[in-house]
Image (cartoon, rainbow, N blue to C red; front, side):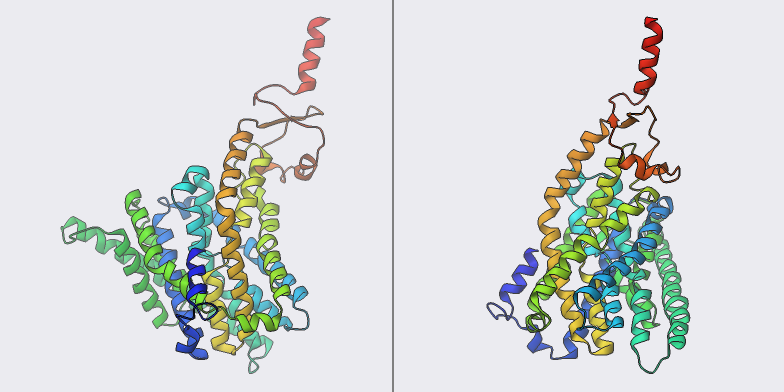
Length: 447
């Protein structure tokens, strides 16, 4: 947030020290934004993949799959509804779908700054932090199919059937699958070279930061050269690289600090200096504020809350309140940032539509402010709520029915019944008997 503020101050809206829009006229500016964003996403995605616990994706594949599958699809649908409702008459149906597609990915840069570091590790559970970062590292690349199908449908030379055909064999079969295969091979090869280098003492110094930047730029250049999806390939390369060996904590923190200071801060300073104020005024500041707040608060949170019983990373508590608290935090902290700008700049490069970039840039700015200001208070709130509720697990209802574990509530068809049960009671002793059973035993003893 501070870096973006610095960019606004030194940009053309304030001091006018730097004006990227003059330096890069027209399409060149959006090309710079697209390529700069691509590099940032590749580096940050591979950094997250390298810093997660060993075999994290293998052991928590279902939670990640739920977040990048049903959650992303429903997020796209909700975002499309907000776009069509707020900007009715200003954007067509396909343009609304395009804006919604750019808002799907959760940003690995902002997510890392929010849920990583000493403060977050002190007040947030490791399971919650890890699943949010794991999702952010993957879904920027997996958002490409949503973006690609809308871009193909917007091309006048392609019919609807041809667009879907190109989508299947170009976006999925070639760009996505080939990127995954190449990323896995590249990460495995780098891992093999690193092992040989340490075994035969060919490496002078083992640097986590050097591995992150070197691997990210290498796999991004190689995969982009053949026309495949480089961002997802970078994440897969990081997963393959650390498949059998954990990284040291000290190296992880040094890498995070180095990446944020060198690259991430410079990117958001640049973003603050290129904000499209004239387009915002043309679209309407009031509409943009309403749309941004609706997207930030409602595009993911209700979806994650609804699906939380099926997401093991959230549904691991005995207390429903703890599950819903973590799910609400995980749904809200899907910040919109570099990934959205990357796809919005790509849309301008392909279609020449600058209003899409204007809408997305306003949402990104709002997300930076809202998530940046609320990070610390909500981390503390989640910490103390979980601490209190974990000491008071849900034991029984007023009717003497034992409440099952949260992850099984929907399975037994009792989720909503228990959620809105007015006589829900809490017992400090998890193994104590239901109230009616205790009273019955007491009455028998007295008789």
